[in-house]
Image (cartoon, rainbow, N blue to C red; front, side, top):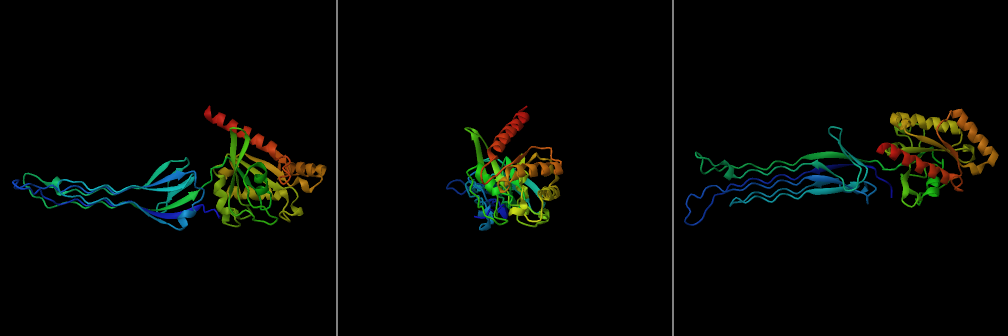
Length: 345
């Protein structure tokens, strides 16, 4: 199923019920006076994060959401019943924006977290509120207020600790298969990954983290080229980026683009999309070492690192053979735990 990570919906809160014009009429009680009750309040519309959802695909088919209207007031000072609230479930990681004002209303990052997106209208007043010494038989009431209506843009940003990025065919899907139970499609042509894949890496019992495989990026991605452009947003929540590069692009990768040029091109696209992405910790993973002799692969790796002037950690691996992938995961686990300890302090 194709991931749908952006949708627009219209939410309408319930209108308030109208106030009632009524008079008390009972035998042997003349001039009973006004007793019209108030209308009930309209229902609110809430968005609630649900960890069991992972796409916004349901909003392709239903885009209108309306809460229940409040009931009208009745005689004998009976208030109308309030409308029931409407709760719309969305995936954890959904950012909610008011389309008309371009204002971010909220960011649902925890399971069960709720966000009020449209407030119900207040119920109208019955005529019992308008009696006075000079107006003993008021025949006036007020209508219920209209509920709020908003056009909302829902944008899903995956909640992953680690994000994989790289050119198409860099081996990201193979890598996530090697280190987790995720089973993304793997094939020998570009743009095999059409939507992000999440995998859980468990290094030990009760020690794990989430890794995301993002569709491959190409030059011009920040302008909408390729498939990765619409998924760049998913890298914004990650705490560490693993930059996969095909160490031997002429052997089936991105022909004509050297590993160094691949790294520079993606750095350029990251900076254009969000400069803060370049500030995130980013480790270099030189993949497909199995396509070269061992000594040749190590020499090529050192040459690439030297030409880039790379100072962060780097690794030489063969994802398809699962060679060198697990030490990276152990280092990532220690790095993430160190970040948590520093945040706690």
